[in-house]
Structure formats: structure tokens, C-alpha cells
Length: 310
Image (tube, rainbow, N blue to C red; front, side):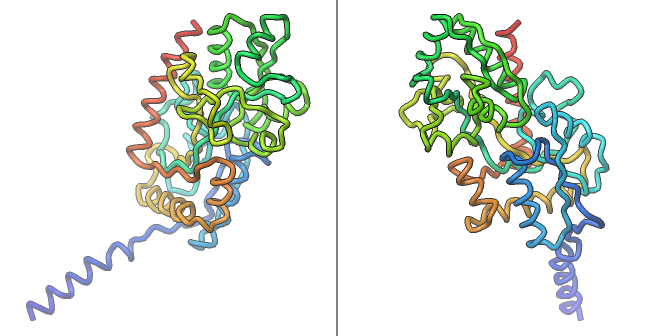
């Protein structure tokens, strides 16, 4: 009898986690921090679709564009903590210190999904092949209009300009694709690209003048980084990440993180294929306390960068 009781208890212990598996008690609102059509929107909608198929949850994507993700984040921080509201944005939404209405402690950070291929870009018909070509043109009287979409990259552009002693006019767009669109439309002659530039670089319409990542870019392995050039101490590349409000139900956070990572860990999934093509080398699945620690380190580094502009 004692053996039977012990066996029954053991079965109960092993069965408990399965019985306690978190399931949403309604549709999950999946807020997207940028507008329709860009990389954030495309991967978010693909991810929502594949999680629905995998888990049977209902997920409703909704764009909440503005302020480089700040509009979405400002609403997310006050959302219910039951796991039915999450948001996808880039790290600078949370770890760049000029977001006065957002504190890094306001959120539960779930997982990264992908990283960027941040580059300084120019039109091929400018004739510029390197960053020095752009600088020489500026010193010869060419008006430099630098397209960007957020506070961090705009600050980065200003740091580059001050390093070389040139002036730039900042053109602010909405979403990462806006800077590339501004270059194509000839509204700007320099711009940042986080990966969406890939097909236009491959087609020869845009050229990469410098890498703004810690490493050289996949498309331009011979082009130095801004760090190598001694212009920046840190990369300006971004990472996409999923977050919920502070105090989010831990079971919900764990279940949603696991579902996202299961989709992205499958190289045959639509989302993983998109991420690998658009943001090589592929999915970036840092999560939990490691992700939170990275964001806090980024915040400290960004504060140091802003001192250059004071």
C-alpha cells in the first residue's frame, strides 16, 4: 500500500506541470510598435499566425506606430498583467534614455527575435563608396540630409557628423523603412538602414558606407565599422524584442516566450525564414534575466553616448 501511495504521489507530481500549463482566457493583443509594411510588422504578423497554428491561441496583431515604438510602449506599460497584451518593438524603445515617459523597469522582457544589420547608406548614383567620400562632399559644400527614424540613430548621426566636423540636417521618418524610402525618393542623401536595405544594396541602388554594428555586415564584409573607425564606442544596431507590462503573470510570460522561441527555432517556419533573410544570420533568442541585463547595459552605454552631444 505504501508503494502504491508513493507511486500515486509521484505520478501526481509529474502530471502537475502539464495540468497547470498556461492558456490565455481570451485573445492575445499583439501590439506592433511600428507601422504596417516594415520589418517589425512583417515578422510580428507572421509570428502571430504561426503561434496561433502551433498553440491554438487567438492572437490579434495591431499596429501602434509612433515615436520609434514609444507610443506602443506607453500604452503597454499600463496594460493588464494577465498575459493578454504583449508588444513587439526594438530595444531602443526601452533602453534609450530620452524616452521620458518610459522607464526600463516598466516592463517584463520576454525574448529577442532578431538583430539588425545597421548600416550608413547612400544612393549609388551619389558616387560615394566610403564614409570619407560623403565627408569630403560635405566639406566641399554638399548639403547632407541624413534620414533616420528615432532618437538613438539621430544621436548617432550627430556623433558621426561632429567627429568629422561637418553639419547634417536630420530627416525623421516613421519606422525603419522610412529612411530607405527617403533615399530612394531622393529626399535624403545619407540614411540608416537596419536590414530592409538588403535588396536595394543587392540591386546596386544603394551602397553601404559603414557598418554601425559591432561587426562588419554580411553584405559588406570589407567595409569597416564605425567602431573600427574610432567614431563610436558602441554599435547602433537594434534588436527586436517582445515585452509585456511590469508584473506580467510569470506563467504567461514563460508560455509566450516558449511559443515564440519554438516557432523561431524551426528553420522551416515562415517567420524564421523571413528573419534569416532580412536580418542575417537569423533568429536571436536571448530571453529572461539575460535580456533584461543587456537592456540595462545598453541604457548605461546610451547615456554615455548622449554626453558627447551636451
